[in-house]
Amino acid sequence: MKALLFNGKLEYREDVRPPRRRVGEVLIKVVLAGICRTDLEITRGYMGFRGIPGHEFVGLVEDDRYPELDGKRVVGEINCPCGKCETCEQGLGNHCPSRTVLGIAERNGAFAEYTMLPNNNLHEVPDSLTDEEAVFTEPLAAAIQITRQVPIRPDTEVVILGAGKLGLLAAQVIGRISRKTTLVAKHPSKLRLIDDMDINLKTSSEFQNEAKRDAQVVVECTGSSTGLKLAKEIVSPRGTIVLKSTYARNSALNFSDVVVNEVTLIGSRCGPFPSALQMLKRGEVSVRPLISVSFQLKDGLQAFQEALKKNYTKVLLYIS
Image (cartoon, rainbow, N blue to C red; front, side, top):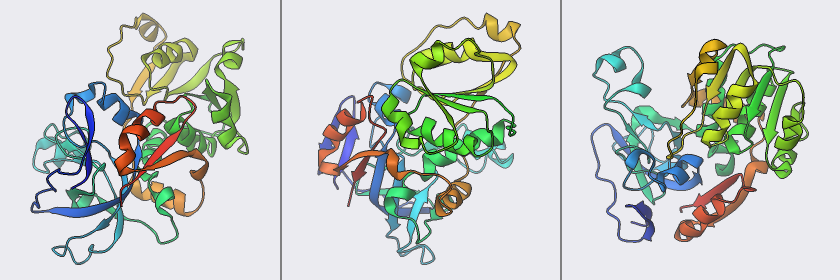
């Protein structure tokens, strides 16, 4: 099987063993996958992962053991809980201590011709969506999760730091709710991707020159530890910081101001796939402008290099 394999170094291989069929899991032929910031951090040591990375994908089920799914076009939730522990029984499977995570923790991912997931993780893609739209389901679900964790009203002042793929999606989701949504980006080119929306768009330099920096909710999507530092500086007393970034490097920050100002810190990760698919189907978010460039799987190493470029948003890999 052809795949990108990480074992301390990322390699393209054509001799990788296909997934072994397991009870309760479905074999999926991967069609298209997206390179995420987390994938880049994995190559820097994040989670100590070894294997096939990749967790944003669209694929076709090729498994006659599941006739109701066989041949269907699907996307898949990435967390695979044990289903038996106390955490799972409480409905918190995404936090199961024994879970595996597609392409991130103890489970080979989607940068390969085939992958496997439990059948309960799969969601059929509506016919009206293209593969290029559907591949955004996982990150869009993560953006929607913010609104499930934090009350946001039309007059809630929200600042989103970072205009990568997740920041741009979060801005579109939150901007539909709050008329006081600001997206801050280092690169003006990123802002132009959604300049037709009713969102306050600021470059980092413009934002830093403003006198008023007192947001009720700050969503940190920079992918850097420096993003949290800025978030602490601009959040209002008793405000909320939502942390979305994952990165391999350690950081040392003073949290005294968080205590003094009674700021709430919320970690935010995966979200609802059905809601994301419905938003995509209804055209409530625009994702095609977020695609920077596409590659074939065999050119995956070059694709990773391109994904590191600051002016790029989403790099896609065509698997088959």
